[in-house]
Amino acid sequence: RSAVTASLSFTERMIAGSIARTAAQTVLHPLDTLRTRAQASKRKGSRSASTQPQDVLLKGIVPQVLLAGPAGALQFVTLEWARDVAATHISSSVAGNLLAGAAGALAASIVRVPQENLKQPVQAGKYANSWVALRTLAPEGPARFYRGFSSTVLRDVPWNALSFTFYKLLVTVAEQALGVSGPATDLAFGLMGGALAAVILTPFDVAKTRVMTQTKEDRSDGTEAYGGTFATLSRIFHEEGPRALMAGVLPRVLYLAPLASLVFAVYGWVEKFLLARHF
Image (spheres, rainbow, N blue to C red):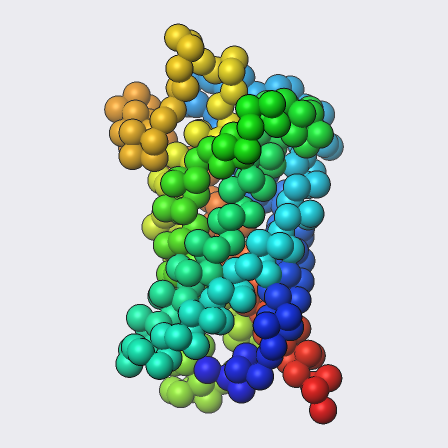
């Protein structure tokens, strides 16, 4: 545990988390769009609206940029608080990091789920832009923006917990066994931790995407095409086969591995900058 993290105030942790998440998600948005489009489409065809190639990669960028900051602030304030609590009650640093990563992701879901419900249907081509999506979904009430909450939690909480824990383990081993540390190792080990966690949890991401991107036009008998997380996983498995549960795994890894890398590295850089201003 660095002195830098322990020295930051509540507000400074919010600032660092907000900057880290906004920077990372904005830079990687095109890869996120490719992942979403791959997962939203059924193997036997898709109803996604046609889009000009030059426009596809930036679809859904507005909610991505506007809501990444609040999500990052909630994530890191909660993560650092959980690490402080865990340090006084849990002897294992691995268990403490797992719990802290999970707690941060759960808190961020308050913002992340509405963000995804606005962003992903636009990325998948269901709506022309984010404003159209907002006007279409708003009449259904606030609960509509939390559709897929369980799928998001089942994807984000384990991924953040695992990627953060893998990252901290690799950094610790490098420092203690090799005497290596610094920005380059933060980037490299964040990349490795994010990639491994991303592959493991891809099926939950597929289920979340299917639930969030379905529209009224996708309903055949007046009911939702996809329901709960595990029901969706089972349906995809039986109707499309096990390979469909790993749809978009490559763009997912290409998105989440550098996302973890950039978030952890940028957060570290910002907190060091903020700490330097204390003196």
